[in-house]
Image (tube, rainbow, N blue to C red; front, side, top):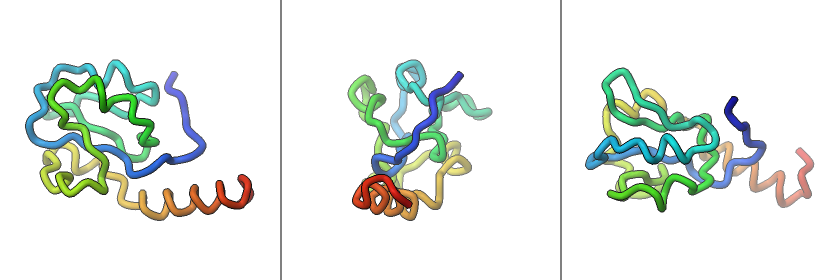
Length: 104
């Protein structure tokens, strides 16, 4: 069973060109946000990814990046269907909630 998160830490991650499909990211993600797509490429489900950073250091080729990184323009076509378009509002909402002491 995947863990769920209550607060987004920042922009969700995506996987860009250059990934070697080693699968380390999938194994270290505690939210089951990273998986092998039908195109046999690893992708990040942006709605499940809280931006916890646990997949960043283990990636041997540095192809996992946050959506607000300029390199996100290199996102692989297989990851596009899983991009969370509303992440900016979600981050803003979570920051406002944290600033108000958890109240919404």
